[in-house]
Length: 296
Length: 296
Image (cartoon, rainbow over all chains, first blue to last red; front, side):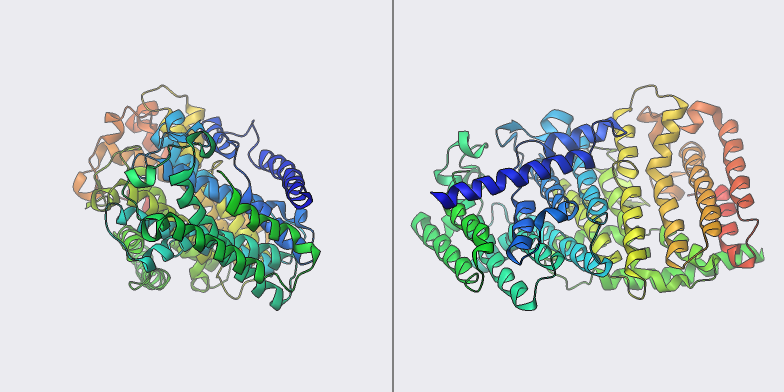
């Protein structure tokens, strides 16, 4: 399909820019090597760069140029990477593999993995705040919003609820908060950041916010489905780990078929929120369609 | 002494403002309680609020009003607190007590303590970036500098070198980097932030930077001395833990007397850098004098 090819081309082009920028922000000769080596290990462990790509695609969708915002975009990838390192620790999910590679603490030890996460989270903010050619007041708002999305009322809060609820029964409302906070909040911040940085109109920002909410929901449901029907080879971690850890997921709550229907509905809602946009939002449309067919 | 009294009064007044602001930034009814409870436990575990006080004292020293910068000042305290929580973890220093109280992970478990640290570090940035009545371009510079000081080339990097060098011999130069990065970098950022926020002159900023470098050095040497000659009752953690962990310190490198001389020299240098300032810098003078006589 032409669309699929064009999404793949778009992502490949952006990934080259993102990887190059991330290398510049964490150079191989940076001191002290103990910490930068551990940070780089996870930063270049095969991430799909979804969050920075979404920021850029949102900027492109409102007529801006996404590639102008690499510092903020890469900050999102650093935040995402830190959260994976801390998540995988024995004190949290205790995963030995991630994307088919040994997790950070299996290579560097728990203490250095904690520090590598801390280093990436902090580097995210120094990097984002080095974004040039953007009005400082807008940059302050964007980075503050990203911090809120990543923090105790967002991603970190979602992880805390997840950790506290392992082996316990939680209701659908708590599950929804947990996933919205764990994954959806940062997706939303990424899309809104792209729109805000590119001076989107109030109407465009509203539409992209709706898109982001549905995108995050579809992403999490698909994650839960893949934990059941995926293969270790493709998702890069043991299948069924949610079930082993007695986690409540969309699949355990709604059955596999119910979860698939919910995911499709979220995708349809995401597409509907882009109705006012023209071809410049094609990448965002392709992204959310890709979501539901992904295998990892 | 009048000076000691006035320093103590100054600190008591500022601590009331800081504690009140910190309570507002992490309200008791914030959701989800799992994470906010753990964050507040360490945030209100008896910290001396030295870093926010230093920011305010620096602003006051250049003719500004330190109390206007509570969001940035409190962000520094959040960063400091997160670093203590992660430091105390079994995977790091493995300390059960801090300031005479059980450490965060002894109460909430290792996983939640990691998240509480992550939550505080992230809250630091959303809080700092909510600072009102400051030119956005200045705020961006100040927060970026604080992030750099707290990150992989600063505090986190110092911790990484510390962790990697346990049980190993390191030279005086590495020791100096480690301590400058672990403690000095954030002190320096605090003092420079106060000066920059209050629109200090280039000359004033330079003088306060020199003061900060010497202050950080004196602080760390005194810490090493207290680990040997302090009492658990006063410093709130087991005495001699550095020696048990086979850490290289200023005392092991220069002997107790040598370390005391180095600390005094750093205090003298700090005072000398304030020569151009009048009575408005008296608190900064008192602070560094207090350092060398402190018992905890």
